[in-house]
Image (tube, rainbow, N blue to C red):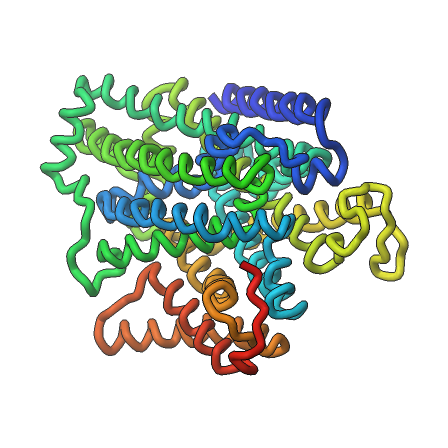
Length: 505
């Protein structure tokens, strides 16, 4: 079985490199392809591919596994996503297209100053590097547990292999390659979920309707948490989902860079709204998968995976059942999981490289920023922009690898909650900065912005701890709003005068 999985993994990797070769033959090349894809990406390809990029390996395993502890209470968060996508389409995309941005954090430089631009870029790099590396970690972790551990291969070996593959197929084409490989990866990700659900239904001799009725009777499909003090209270989930999408998609260079490869603003808006509708359907599919996994365990006596303390590990439920059903479901699961991991990491590496090149190395200040032969002074060396971009790309790949390996001893609970908490504290300052820039006419003291961006998450954390210990109230994912609100308040306190304006909308 292990050899079969390895061969399928190799075949899928070859398919990715074939896509890279095909996309590299026509259209934009060099830096223009890497950063912008020539702004010729079909909107429907971007929309479909964004499903895989948004779900990632964590959603692939944590959403189905999360049904064990939280039923379908994840779904109100998804409803909030739709509201967030609407805000992106109507507010943020028109701004980005009007300013002809490649890195969206250039807006902060125009609005507040260079220090603010670099602060926004740093918070994105920190959040995306941690978040995406942990998503990739989960993929490597499962492959290690179910394939490589049996061969006595150390954990770091598959981690190195994965990062090397992603580096190689994004090294040349960048975002141009990512747009098309995301489409392929979304297909395999969804196929794995569908095949597993069908296999479980056949094994239990049940229809989908019977499965859902049985799951409802057991409380697995409960969607709304009505306790206002609970972290997943449904109104908190809806509001959090809206702002999680605005920040983790609309203020995220990775996701926006793909949208900005569309030919026109209208195409980009169609892409975003189509993605939001598809996202509802896809998440319902994964929650149905979670219900099916628990039904399979209940009906067959399958022992759910536990840790050393005997506590069920939600992230291991899907792979454990998939591997127990048949060799075919195991192979399809691995391909879906690998696809989810690739789709999360490839765009992130490209976005991190773009952000650093534009917001720290000043590519946007060159007369021809996408001219690969243009020279730029970097660390007292005169290098072509192509050489600089490639060096930066490799450096971020190495950082990515270090985070994956370093996190290995700390993985205990479901990663999806961990990721959203990281996002709440690291994207909060970005939310506050953009909201303050878009909806006020006041400037902020540019030199104070880094201090404010650090103080806001600290104050949010302390406030949440106090409310939890004193009143039993946990903000949950809504900590993002508290963080953003504190950032706006501190920016307002630092502002110079209402007469000085710099609104670019």
